[in-house]
Length: 310
Image (cartoon, rainbow, N blue to C red; front, top):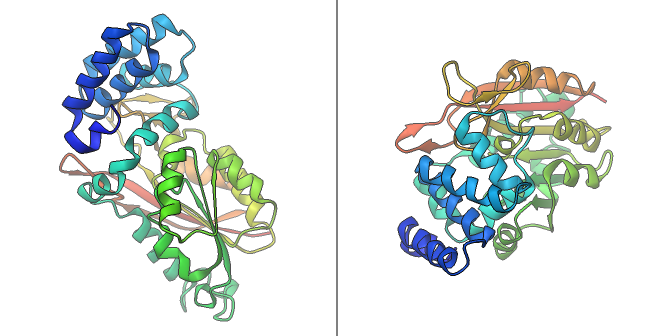
């Protein structure tokens, strides 16, 4: 059924899942997958009904809980459950690149441009990265956190001596491996994967359209601060902006919210405060951007860059 989604569209994929459920009404994997497709296609009533059916059968199903929380306006969890992200992107992998092209997705390009500007003559990180150590040296150890199919890889390969990618989805990792660009690829949650890299192991961490699946950024920022410690390295990532009047449930304190899409949006003040709390990440860029479009409308977002001060 997952194969039908990119080949023949949502209606045929949903019909396939419905057939599976008709044969086995308690097939939670098919119910959850169908709910996810309805959710992506903005058929919220049908998606909510299917999520509830999953929870009737499996009350602790984390993916269904998250999807229903997003649709019902509950606060949900501090980040999207691993099962939710993994299953969604395993299904999405075959059509991922084409879909993002249709969404005018430009986060990787924006991140590369921001890195180049930061270390260019007169840039805020120039003093940390003279020419013999900067991007043109090709000596940076780079982590693409939440690499997906590897769309950032071609843009960052030329500045790296070692380019690693991590992602929760095995099928996304498989697609990234097909590019033959990365030196190391691994299935991992982003904070855990960055932490595993080790203290002082990286000069650059990038996360393009990734923290939208994380509400509480504390663990990711703490892990990044550790991996950059002693290198004067950079952390760059994009977010979706939490705007006034936007639907969704706000976190306690209001720094981020779970939106109806199942993604998280973050306020600028929250991101800067969370980075400052690490004790070693200094903001050098916090600018508005449009990381992608959605149904003909630009998605409001921010691009952040921090440097390690330790």
